[in-house]
Image (cartoon, rainbow, N blue to C red; front, side, top):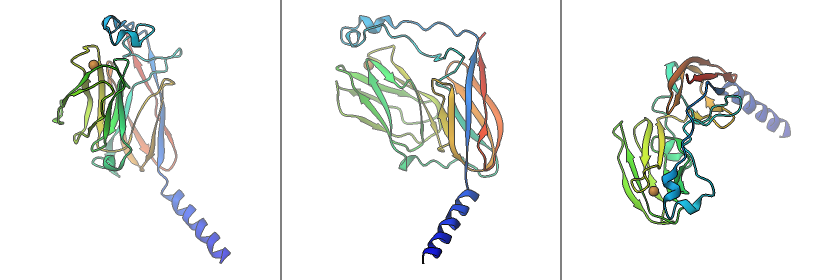
Length: 237
Ligand SMILES: [Cu+2]
């Protein structure tokens, strides 16, 4: 019986390795000097929002490390041959994503979700916000008042879209951009510039890197059963 169990385990492991999907990993680098971040002075002048901060927050469109490590770049895949991922959203069963309003700022400012995935919008502040979404792709638009520490808002969007805008009309400096994909194969670069798109099925794809201010770059990739590295460099002049 023990021998049978061992053979069974080996068989399962072999089958798993044969169908192993690979990760696409990479680093995003920024060259050149981006425009300086701008202090959000109106926030500090607001009687409720101001005291929530010790120092004046700034805009953070360009989140870049000492060696050009470039964060907040949305990396996704488009089909280019074999094993199509378009329409393979797992959003309805994916863990909810969270967009918080904290210190009268959206956190995070750049977020990515799947079609059908639950997006929880939270108000962690002692003041009223209104959550106002605008779509360029036909997604349902919202304009909802959310009371201080009020109940979460729950949204889901059914169409792919890059950088769908969230804003608060009460605090005109508050913006977030939520990208929506109809598959689970995307990632956002961290403060180390790195991203990982996990468990990509074998096939040919176009890797698409999008930055809110610097636009889009693409590279072709073929995924087999080994991890693939794809790096991008963005420039500001
Ligand atoms: Cu607000």
